Amino acid sequence: MSSAVPSPTAAARSASRDPSAAHRSGARREASWRRENGRHELARGGISHPRLTARAAVLAVVSLILLTLAVAPLRTLIDQRDTLGQLERQAEDLDRRNSRLEARIDQLNDPGYLERLARECLGMVRPGETAFVMVPKHGPPPANRC
Image (cartoon, rainbow, N blue to C red; front, side):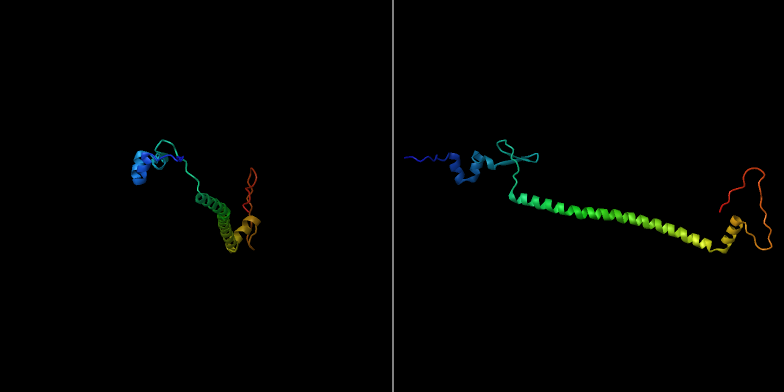
Protein backbone atom coordinates (compact mmCIF):
# COMPACT_ATOMS: atom_id res chain seq x y z
CA MET A 1 0.00 0.00 0.00
CA SER A 2 1.01 3.51 -0.57
CA SER A 3 1.24 6.08 2.16
CA ALA A 4 -0.97 9.19 2.15
CA VAL A 5 2.02 11.51 2.44
CA PRO A 6 2.48 13.43 -0.78
CA SER A 7 5.87 13.44 -2.34
CA PRO A 8 7.82 16.67 -1.93
CA THR A 9 7.88 19.02 -4.85
CA ALA A 10 11.00 19.86 -6.70
CA ALA A 11 11.20 23.26 -4.99
CA ALA A 12 10.93 21.74 -1.52
CA ARG A 13 13.60 19.15 -2.33
CA SER A 14 15.93 21.85 -3.56
CA ALA A 15 15.18 23.93 -0.44
CA SER A 16 16.38 21.16 1.78
CA ARG A 17 19.71 21.20 -0.04
CA ASP A 18 20.04 24.97 -0.71
CA PRO A 19 18.01 27.43 1.47
CA SER A 20 18.51 30.28 -0.96
CA ALA A 21 16.94 28.19 -3.72
CA ALA A 22 13.74 27.87 -1.70
CA HIS A 23 13.53 31.62 -1.43
CA ARG A 24 14.02 32.05 -5.16
CA SER A 25 11.49 29.39 -5.99
CA GLY A 26 8.79 30.83 -3.78
CA ALA A 27 8.40 27.74 -1.59
CA ARG A 28 8.75 29.81 1.55
CA ARG A 29 6.90 33.02 0.68
CA GLU A 30 5.80 33.70 4.25
CA ALA A 31 9.43 34.18 5.21
CA SER A 32 10.17 36.86 2.65
CA TRP A 33 9.21 40.30 3.92
CA ARG A 34 9.24 43.75 2.38
CA ARG A 35 9.10 46.99 4.27
CA GLU A 36 7.28 49.86 2.58
CA ASN A 37 5.93 53.03 4.21
CA GLY A 38 6.66 51.73 7.68
CA ARG A 39 4.52 48.56 7.29
CA HIS A 40 5.61 45.00 6.92
CA GLU A 41 4.14 43.37 3.87
CA LEU A 42 4.41 39.84 2.74
CA ALA A 43 5.95 39.25 -0.66
CA ARG A 44 2.60 38.04 -1.96
CA GLY A 45 0.92 41.35 -1.06
CA GLY A 46 -0.73 40.66 2.30
CA ILE A 47 -0.21 43.03 5.25
CA SER A 48 0.97 41.48 8.50
CA HIS A 49 -0.26 42.78 11.83
CA PRO A 50 2.14 43.09 14.74
CA ARG A 51 1.64 40.36 17.29
CA LEU A 52 1.31 41.03 21.01
CA THR A 53 3.78 38.72 22.68
CA ALA A 54 3.72 37.77 26.34
CA ARG A 55 6.83 39.86 26.96
CA ALA A 56 5.22 42.91 25.35
CA ALA A 57 2.02 42.40 27.36
CA VAL A 58 3.96 42.17 30.64
CA LEU A 59 5.97 45.25 29.70
CA ALA A 60 2.77 47.17 28.88
CA VAL A 61 1.14 46.18 32.20
CA VAL A 62 4.24 47.11 34.21
CA SER A 63 4.48 50.44 32.36
CA LEU A 64 0.84 51.23 33.09
CA ILE A 65 1.28 50.36 36.76
CA LEU A 66 4.36 52.59 37.03
CA LEU A 67 2.58 55.47 35.29
CA THR A 68 -0.41 55.07 37.58
CA LEU A 69 1.81 55.07 40.66
CA ALA A 70 3.70 58.14 39.41
CA VAL A 71 0.57 60.28 38.94
CA ALA A 72 -0.13 60.91 42.64
CA PRO A 73 3.40 62.07 43.57
CA LEU A 74 3.58 64.26 40.48
CA ARG A 75 0.24 65.86 41.31
CA THR A 76 1.42 66.45 44.88
CA LEU A 77 4.65 68.00 43.60
CA ILE A 78 2.76 70.37 41.29
CA ASP A 79 0.34 71.36 44.09
CA GLN A 80 3.23 72.00 46.47
CA ARG A 81 5.00 74.18 43.88
CA ASP A 82 1.82 76.22 43.43
CA THR A 83 1.44 76.59 47.19
CA LEU A 84 5.09 77.57 47.51
CA GLY A 85 4.65 80.28 44.86
CA GLN A 86 1.59 81.67 46.64
CA LEU A 87 3.41 81.69 49.99
CA GLU A 88 6.43 83.45 48.45
CA ARG A 89 4.17 86.17 47.00
CA GLN A 90 2.41 86.52 50.33
CA ALA A 91 5.77 86.83 52.13
CA GLU A 92 6.87 89.56 49.69
CA ASP A 93 3.61 91.47 50.30
CA LEU A 94 4.08 91.18 54.05
CA ASP A 95 7.69 92.37 53.77
CA ARG A 96 6.56 95.47 51.83
CA ARG A 97 3.83 96.17 54.39
CA ASN A 98 6.30 95.68 57.22
CA SER A 99 8.70 98.17 55.60
CA ARG A 100 5.91 100.77 55.29
CA LEU A 101 4.93 100.27 58.93
CA GLU A 102 8.55 100.61 60.08
CA ALA A 103 8.84 103.85 58.10
CA ARG A 104 5.64 105.09 59.76
CA ILE A 105 7.05 104.19 63.20
CA ASP A 106 10.22 106.16 62.45
CA GLN A 107 8.10 109.10 61.26
CA LEU A 108 5.99 109.08 64.43
CA ASN A 109 9.12 108.97 66.59
CA ASP A 110 10.38 112.20 64.95
CA PRO A 111 9.68 115.18 67.30
CA GLY A 112 9.45 117.64 64.38
CA TYR A 113 6.77 115.59 62.67
CA LEU A 114 4.81 115.23 65.91
CA GLU A 115 4.92 118.98 66.50
CA ARG A 116 3.66 119.66 62.97
CA LEU A 117 0.79 117.20 63.48
CA ALA A 118 -0.10 118.83 66.80
CA ARG A 119 -0.18 122.32 65.24
CA GLU A 120 -2.04 121.37 62.02
CA CYS A 121 -4.47 118.75 63.25
CA LEU A 122 -5.13 119.71 66.81
CA GLY A 123 -4.58 123.49 66.61
CA MET A 124 -2.06 123.45 69.45
CA VAL A 125 0.39 126.28 70.05
CA ARG A 126 3.42 126.70 72.28
CA PRO A 127 3.16 128.80 75.36
CA GLY A 128 3.39 132.48 74.44
CA GLU A 129 2.28 131.98 70.82
CA THR A 130 -0.99 133.32 69.46
CA ALA A 131 -3.06 131.07 67.21
CA PHE A 132 -4.81 132.54 64.18
CA VAL A 133 -7.47 130.75 62.21
CA MET A 134 -8.15 131.88 58.66
CA VAL A 135 -11.82 131.64 57.72
CA PRO A 136 -12.64 131.89 54.00
CA LYS A 137 -15.32 134.41 52.97
CA HIS A 138 -17.10 132.05 50.62
CA GLY A 139 -17.51 128.27 50.82
CA PRO A 140 -16.52 125.75 53.44
CA PRO A 141 -13.10 125.76 55.09
CA PRO A 142 -10.46 123.48 53.53
CA ALA A 143 -10.49 119.89 54.72
CA ASN A 144 -8.12 118.93 57.47
CA ARG A 145 -5.29 116.62 56.29
CA CYS A 146 -5.16 114.70 59.55
